[in-house]
Image (cartoon, rainbow, N blue to C red; front, side):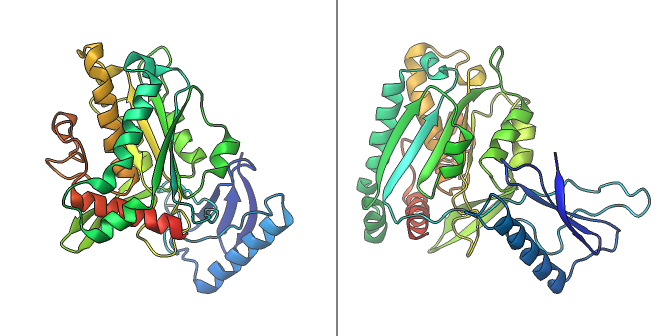
Length: 331
C-alpha cells in the first residue's frame, strides 16, 4: 500500500509501508519540474513527517537517489507513467569506527551442503580475507589500510530478519545463498524484494583503478537482477557495493551479495570440486561488494571460466578494497 502524505504543485511524496520506509516521488504533467524552493519545502515536510511518526530514529531526505529533475514523467497524450517510480531510502546509521568486518552468510535452504560444509566455506573465506594485507607487492599505504581490519565470516541456516537488516551497519556485508532452481527457487520478484529490504539504491557504482586514480561505471542493480537471475544460468552471483567513493551519499552502507546455488553452479561438477568453486564465486562477488568492477583476466573477470584461475585480487583491486573499508570506518 502506498500512502501519500504531501502534495504540492503536482508533486506527490509517498511512502509505501511503515516497515520498508520507502519514499517515492511522482510528478504530474509533462512540464512539471520542481525548483529549488519546492524541493526545500519537500525536504522540510518529510522531516516534519518523520518527527511526528514512529520513525523518530531516522530522518528522511529527498535527495541522493532522486535527482531534482529525475521525477517520473507522464505523457501529455495519455497521462501514462513514462518510467517507474524511483526508490528512495532513508540514510544509513552512522558507524562506530570499528575495524571488524562482518561477512554474514544466510542460507535458508541449507544449499551449502550440496557443495561443501558450512565450516569449510567459512574457514576458507575468512583465511583468504585476513591474508589480503600480506599479498606480495602491495604498496605500504595499502598494507597499512588492510592490516587494521579483521574479517569475521559467519554462517546461518536461515534468512536474515527485517530487524537484523535494519541494523546492518557500515561494516556488515550480508550474503545470501539462494537458487533459481526448483523446488526451493526464488523468483525474480523475490530477489528484487530482497534488494528493497536491504535498501539497495537503484544506481550501483563499481570502480577500476587507473594510474593513481579511479574511474567508475554505473549500472542499475534491479534491472540486472530482473535480466539475469532466472534467464541466465551462467550468472552465478551478484555483488552490490555501496557508493563508497561518492561524497556525502546517504546510501554508503548499502551492500548485498547473492550467490545463485544449484543450476550452473554444480552442473557437471563432481562434489570434490564444488568447495573451491563456491569459495571462488564468493571472492568474486565480495570483490564487487568492496567496490570493484569487472576486469578481464583477473579474479574480477566476468566469466567464471577465467576468474577461477586467479586466487586473489590484483594489487590495484586491493587498493580499492582498502580505501572502501577505510571510508566505511570513518563514517
